[in-house]
Length: 434
View 1 (cartoon, helix red, strand yellow):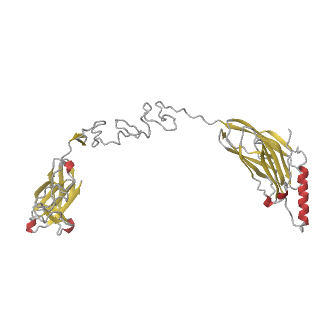
View 2 (view 1 turned 120 degrees about the vertical axis):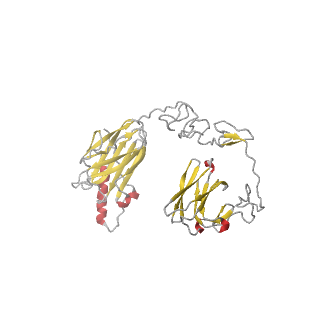
View 3 (view 1 turned 90 degrees about the horizontal axis):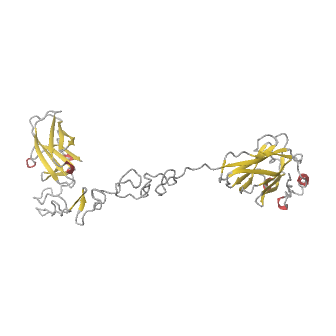
């Protein structure tokens, strides 16, 4: 094998310049430089190049560490190492010439010796020549940084390459001993890189050519026979799940959409609107009924009137509620509460309330008022019934029946012992919103 001659030429700017007074250092430096320069004039045959393998780590060997599996077209890094043992051996200088296969492209290369002009290095050349020969020439006069034992020399980072086998062969490789200034005997391993093919990807199956399907990059398709149906598609009112979210026509309200009233595509006439899925004529606004001229009443902008026969009674003040055309105190202002009212869940058209006596009043007859109201506060039904005298702990059930329970928004219950004009006492109250 023809070996490339290492050139240990020290540039003037990288030479260590000792003080004139330090004659001993000057002598050592001169001798060392002379040895390096003398060796650079020789062809070195002390290194033996061994087969195509990776660095084994044994003493007296050098080569690239096995990088493991390399996949095609993916960058990878190789680390060059050597082991010179620890029995008085140190590195004064190290050089190599590596042939780079034309199919491989270097992205970066770095020395790992840690030798710089600032810490005693007299040679730091690391260059790629014509993209095919990598030359490395380093030397130091600092014994503290001279390498011994096993050490890393350089990292080489390659760009991705096609699958196949590639051979990394050294044209030369030499390590100069720091103590003897002689080249060391080494087994240098050339390397064979095997770059594996990337695993094959399953073929995309897209029957309707909307980019979605089995093994497709865009993702799976919930209907691969309709290009209008795939994840992210616009939802149409057509009885289908267009955007593959397991919902059908979720963007359309068939109860109120005049273009899809009751079913997709059913369009209401110009003068009708969609209500509860049926095209109907819109109701005419009801006139304001204000019998006492206080601006309050049924369908009036100001709001409902508690007593439309008395202009002094319209909206009840805070702490009071409207009952039987009068503003009466709420539960918080009641005094002398003697009973407890508890809600019973509605059963069909039946709305019930349980009265439980908290003390004895066997001779006192009470009256219970149950009001059912809609969401606007309008009274749908008012029922009055007598409650017999009770003893402590005794229960009594009052109920009211209303044929349109879906319209009921609130239930109010009041239990009292006299009429309002007689100076009533309210013993219990309950308000339940539905």
